[in-house]
Every structure is written in structure tokens, then in C-alpha cells.
Image (cartoon, rainbow, N blue to C red; front, side, top):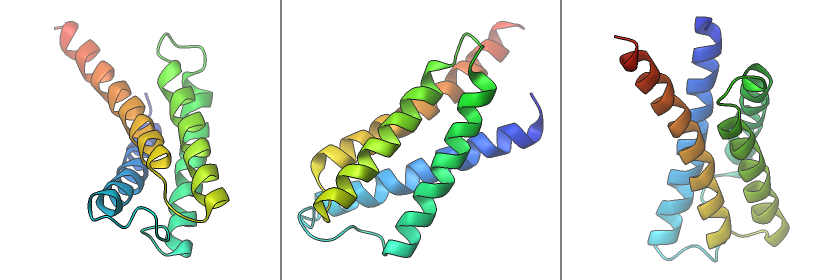
Length: 120
């Protein structure tokens, strides 16, 4: 795998972590019914980067045996953002969907590392 693709996938994991972490922090602090935990500019930028890198991951992993995590990540990220913008506030469903996005990308990295160690 080219290093540039690996960096792109790491960027997706970072954006998913930031979105999920900000949503979880707002949920735990009791501000979940208020506005989104990130300013709109940052929120939109993180989401767009996550969407673009998720689509890139989906394109590169489409025919591999491990293509489903990228599809789950893109669908969960789009659904969470749609819910957050439709309601104009953060909901628990959006936070759970951002966690699903993060878990799918983290699982992809786990399988990549597991397969690399299994070859030894």
C-alpha cells in the first residue's frame, strides 16, 4: 500500500476521532441538547475531510476482502452529520454514529496490523 494512502486513512481516523470525541464530551457534560460542540467552520471542515478521505478509502478498498469498514465509515459519518444539521443540535444518535464511523476505521487498522503480524 502506498504511504500516501495510509496517511489518508490516518487522517480519516483522526477526523472521526475528533468528531466522536467532541460529541462524546458534549454528551457527558450534559450539553447534548445544545448546539454542536465544535464551531460550524471546524465541524464542516472535519466532516468534509472525513468524507473525502472516506470516499478515497472506499475506492481503494472496494475490491479487497476488507472493503466493508470504509463503506460503514462513510455511511455512518454522512448519517451522523445529517442528523446533527437537521436537528440543529447534537443528538445521542449522531454521537453513536460517529462512534460507529471511528470503530469501522479503527477495525480496518487492526486487521491491517493483524494480517501483517500473521505473516511472520
